[in-house]
Figure 1 (cartoon, one colour):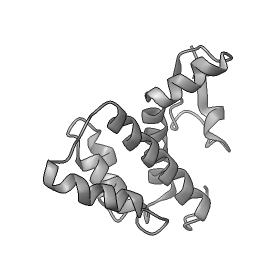
Figure 2: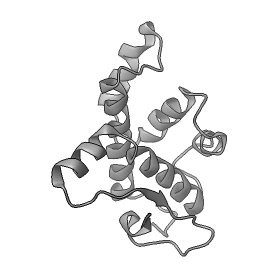
Figure 3: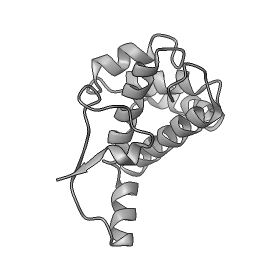
Figure 4: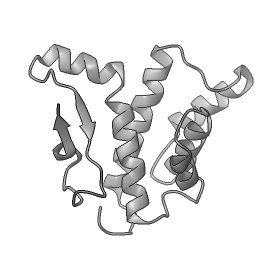
Length: 139
């Protein structure tokens, strides 16, 4: 993660998070696209790979005006070819969105081991972690 190079692992993490978020929106019957474009967006989503996930992410972030402006600014700058700090900021935002999904809450409830509230650690006050899970702080 500390390297500015593009890696398959980084791409796979992005793709998994994007697919999870879109699936959660579908299950909640939330649609950010008009009917005429939803089929083409689904096609793009299904064909997403290491070379196209940046564009899919940009379209996803643009779809909801409630998403943070700073994330939109980052993904609009030829993402994923941005600084490491900007990539981490986007990944942390994606992770925080994942923690709000019903998929995450179902897994936690089914497992029965983790029933705590969470928040993502501010990167400005901590060093970059090796694993995102270690960045969780239980309340």
